[in-house]
Image 1 (cartoon, rainbow, N blue to C red):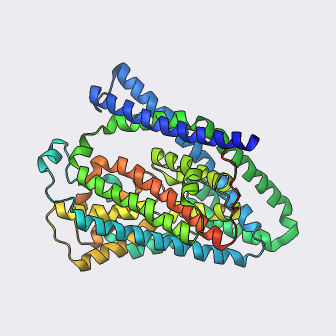
Image 2 (tube, rainbow, N blue to C red):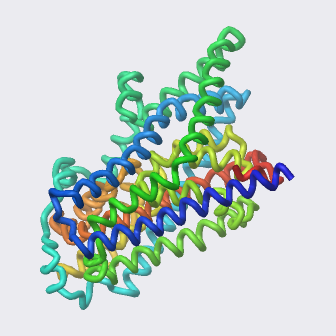
Image 3 (cartoon, rainbow, N blue to C red):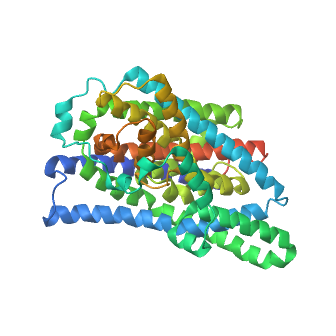
Length: 439
């Protein structure tokens, strides 16, 4: 009876988050229709600011937990492996799976964009009415992407994994550097042996505290997500969607195919796990990812859902998920492949098969270097555009609806991370087949 109540509680949380998202969309679009996004003073503006701050509080709470959670969970997972050589096996399988799914995502995007051709026949007057111009976003131009190739990005990512100062990496929240230092630190602790048991017990206690903290924050998640989504759609409205609808639908169709067909098949065939059960278990994390557009901010909730609700051993999830939040960007890679060809069609540029192969390779590799924050895909898209010999100005053409597409591709990124944990977990016999509590 008690177990049934716990499951019901979990279902209530999922529905509350979904209701908060739907209510936020409706209220935000209504506000946008009535007052427009340009209100900068008065009571209406105060309400808009309130919604924005309320949503920001939720994201800050999640980000507050990332560093201690990643450090404690990975340290505990590595120490509990027993044989450190197991880490190399798990890491190799994880990276191989991530590369496979990212490549499949890009391939799906390229096939769809060549079938639908979203950039042909688009209403140029509608774009002009929305003031959509070919300006290079500051965040893109500041990165100097025109001088960097996908190969350089990958090399930079690998070299920069090693922190010059671990404390500085933690202060900046650089997850990849934190992962590297934590794994190195945990391996050394395992080699020291019993003399490090006291420290290991302290860090294990920190891990338990952070898990409890995630559960506490989830109590207010539905309400904060409502405020967050409302604030987003107060600015967005629906005008941009109507002008760039064909492009947006192409991206979302590709994301849907990858999320609903490709990844579930891998989970079912390789992971021997029900994709439906996994989707139910991960639904709070996926909905939160959609709302925040940040796989890093969602990481604490993803880790919690995977261990408590999906039955995946923590030693797998606590290693695979933080790594995935930084290097596995299926949704971002797919979006970039569609966006680059869409921009080419809009500019009247014919891309040969050879150039599309370059886009395939570059988008697959560049996605690995994308940060796990909102809008990071725009920076890596500049790399893909440069590799295809196209001007960076084209990025300005898709900015109007990038925020909403960012939400969908982030949800797919988080879903992809979870499927990796299940597949690797099955390979390592680290999955509990008995359904866990849905609290």
